[in-house]
Image (cartoon, rainbow, N blue to C red; front, side, top):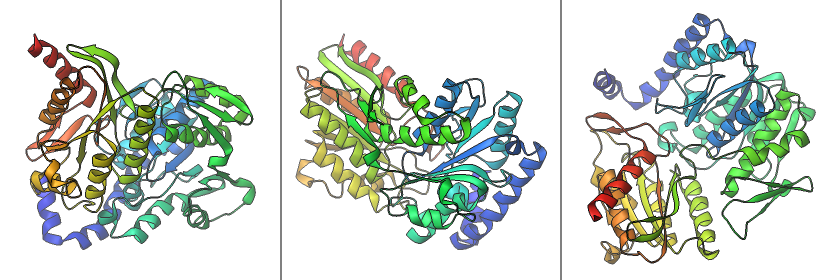
Length: 447
């Protein structure tokens, strides 16, 4: 079926495909809403969009509301909760198929949920996968950076796609925006029924992050009070503030009452997610392995800055980065930038692949990522290995040569995805599980 779909796309061309797709998904999604009885109309719905931070903000918002007994379901690219417990999103889609989305919204209603929080992507919005929701009670804009530009046909189309969320804000709905992002005003201009009393802007001036002197978890000062957290990234803490304000607007609970729950929030699977921390692994005295989704320059920059700060604080001495990007021809502009960031900010980079299909040349993906790395350092400071598992194995081998130091291995690009697209189809894949298997193989092999 997939090959037939690809053949049809090839025959009719990209432009026609892009024109047809919104009609197809819009009709399909609306029929799904009819079939499941328009479940979103029985819920308060929060939509969250932005280039980075959507997943974390969505999950944190849902978790916080559940902590204060406002039963909430949420749909993100990492995890889904329909009112019972979280489970990993196995669909490899940030914006679910519209019929599936309404199915999950129906389950939320059946399970007694009062609120639904949904991660909204630019492609999902452009393809009308929001049809049948009937409007959002809260619409959140986090930020906008270059991403998916080929898919949208340029920056202007990308920002317009994001703005669709705000066009669908209910008359009595609330707008939450990032005061530090210059695109916030554009998003606000797309709100049909503007009411300044229903507009909330969040700024980096609203909070202060306090690094720990003894560990990687940080504190945050908000409203002149200091709160402990189980979070390690500055961006996670910023996302928490957006989540709390959105939760407050639909949950009937004040922001000050919600803030103490920050200490109970744990990282989202696949986002700044440790597999092991400071463990002795055979001859490696102090090894940590971290998984993160970072797949575009800005998130990569922030991740590596966090790690650089950890090195300055003495938590780690050497950093090995397993770096990847999606297929050639999709946002190729970003690949050399990501490679250069890794080359400059880490001690070793193992360049590999994640999702690609029969149309792609995996070696071209690796070459693009390595384009801005010093060629003479290949085989010394950076390595190119197509097979992801072998690349991760190589990272462990490098770590074994640094046995007496505090070593951090970080792998990016996959996060909590439950499968990798390969030329012969989708293979089962869980990054954390693969790391655990490789560590065990490393120990056994060393024996």
